[in-house]
Length: 559
Image 1 (spheres, rainbow, N blue to C red):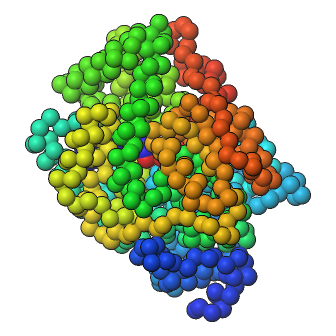
Image 2 (tube, rainbow, N blue to C red):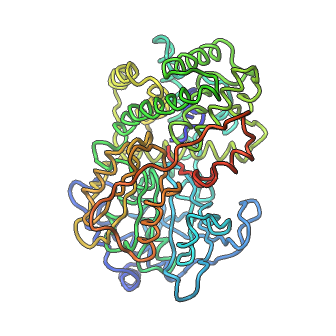
């Protein structure tokens, strides 16, 4: 979870339409079971078929993207109408923003559209087509065969965006230290969380009951129909893997190709309270990995030559920022929002270490510039607030959360003893779900045994945001799936990294549908290399490491 500043801590009818839909795609095979939950009944199953049939007839009116969206030609944009409530397919609709870059190959090479979700929940997939227009090396082969299609999920960006708090207030810094010193600190954080939940209800109440992963999966099927595709080709990263798993459960016969990368454990008991507790453990592991790397490169960064010394320096920095926020805006909450980039992505290892090293050498401004919010960036601040609002709304609506503060307090107090890096920050970010003012569903039992094409699952062993057991769990649930494990690695979003063992299999799968006869274990991608001399500029850093690490826009929007 790319945690921006949040909550005072970091985280930061019927017959004709139905028949038309059945002509477009195979049967959804989405008959609900008793365990599927309130959000997956026969009314929703009928509603999505009606909506898909309607979208198939309408198609998408592709045009140049609005200038203020920031997508250059030849990327095109359009809209797909979906029901707000799938039990009322002829009721209120919302418009889902989509964009595309058409395939670069011949007519004979073209295989359809590849739809992308980067995670979150709350991430926009609209930058995905730029992998074609910028000629991203890892995607040159597949872009010959596929139109690359992105979309803003319901509630995100241009798709009926929701909000929970004034964006300028949301990004304002410094915020309270997420690690409580006493009971008064906890009470203050609980108050902020409850106020945030109230704000969601006040500002976006109509949308909240419908902000679920199953509804986004239904939107995805309507998009498939609007694209004129009988079956879906899908790439989902991070939370996008849970979206993919739910889609495969609801619409197993609609899947043509599906890659899920960096996998959320879809077990019903894991969604979402336990998933966040699991992150706390995994983030500590990966934080330790990064500290070991910093210590190994002490001749470059001069922070500490052992993990213990690096951790001691971090605690000194936290204490100093708590006593006197750096530059007046960087406190402990803002620090964790910055430093958590290193456990997330290997591409952040060098920049985070360099910025810290500069600070220790007396360059305070480097740290402030890297962390402090830009209060003049009204568009960017609104996007950050919207992303956090969607994250909260989806996770709170997908599942029933504990309402007992005693349980939250007990669980997080115990976890913090061994895994202090993220635990309390994570707790406060999710605490609004304890006082949520809208419907909370029972998660769908993810799994498909019949009618599902082989799904390719890609996962690194030491991923902090989506621990490895999630990939194992989804693999068992999706019949015929194959698991590629990147061993001794932990960067989030594996398919955007240079690792020929993985890259060639991704290409082969998307281009031919073929998977290995057995699961595959690959070695790690290249470990980031610390600059040998003076700290590199941003330009030289990109030049030296661009072959191995993804551009920032390639990174998944996991939360």
